[in-house]
Image (cartoon, rainbow, N blue to C red; front, side, top):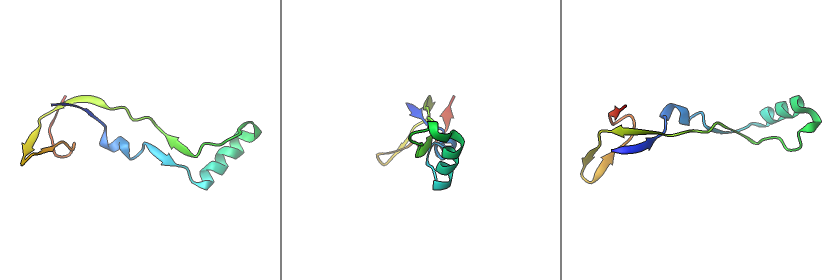
Amino acid sequence: MLYDVFDPNARGEGFKWLTDGEIEAIKSTAGKKLKRPPRYNREPLKPKAMFFHAKIEQSTMQCHPERVRLAG
């Protein structure tokens, strides 16, 4: 089967709310030219098209990257 697959290791580092300390650090480095500091840090996650060997048992398809064999 062909699906868009996200790297499970990168998902933990994707979207993150900034702490108050991180926001204050951004404000102090940017100075007065920064009107509204960012509240989050987001790295875009891009899926990759991958084939995998689908295993369907009792009307359930296993598709988690740890439980299937990716082809490619």
